[in-house]
Amino acid sequence: MPEPSDENNSNLYLRLQQSQLVRANIQNISQYLNTGLSPETLDICVKLLEAGVHPQSLAESVILIRNQMAALDNNGDNAH
Image (cartoon, rainbow, N blue to C red):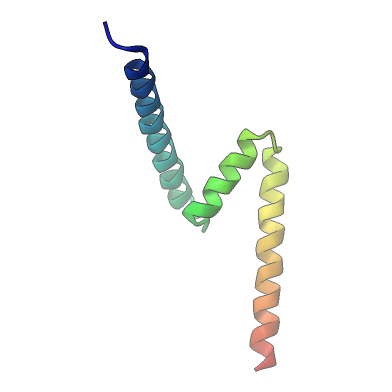
């Protein structure tokens, strides 16, 4: 019979493997949909969704931030 700590380590290892597989699949979907989200940004979005942030609100926030960053970039380009 396996020791309880061995069983816990196996469960942690399986959860880690599943988590990595899910993360890889989410990143693949993101690339397929051409979201332009970096892996780090995508991880943050997933964590926010898991914490209960409304998906539509998150999407609108990401779009707003992108638009504001683009405007800042454009203003910077015009200053040169």
